[in-house]
Length: 332
Image (cartoon, rainbow, N blue to C red):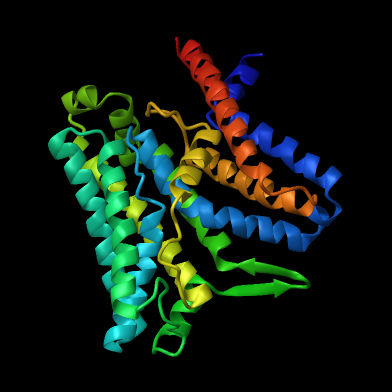
């Protein structure tokens, strides 16, 4: 009994149970969902959300939010694409410049939150609008349209595609490299949270920043670092999108920030901070991938997907609240 309670008190317990139920359900109602090709497509869909969701989950455990996480993926790709297209330089130079840009945005978000005391929700909402407007305005100014130019002929494109957007086939199934990167990032995040001093700092600043500061935790550095991790992972997904599709639409990315938050919450991360883990966030992203494609494979109207997301979020909040109380009771 005690062992069962200990398992139920883990942040990812509810998400794992939900993932099993949803997986079995779509196996039963959608015959095309049962193929290896479909499963690999689900993994790919999950990875494009799950990579950034790892960083968003860490930030939420640290007690903050980043509403610019969706549009910064497009900003990253546009900086790389338009710089190299306009100046005719190697794509690796543009990728490095784009990384510096994204890290600077993350640093600015974290610095403003810590310096001003304004809630991260408001600071990053402002960043969201700045990036969204800049994506559209600068792209139209440089290219004359709201999409970037095809950069597939520029030097360095093929080698960067191998890093960010390569794939391999196994029969009819396509396995994208983003799935491997997703697993790697989730594993590193899990190791950091559970086995390192930095992980202890993240839980501490999310639980109570004042108490953490009193015992010597570098609260400012920890939180700014978490914002920069989100921006780095947003850059990574932006690179994937650019090197898979060759061009980007400047208006894309809006709304994805909520998908990252939903993946983290469904995975057991509390909105109040200080509770959650990386494996739960990964499971939450997998649930998103299963559901978004399972509805299509079942032949249903995909417009119902958003309704499902809302129900899933509400249920996750209720389950997480119960799990948190159970965990607190076990600790007591």
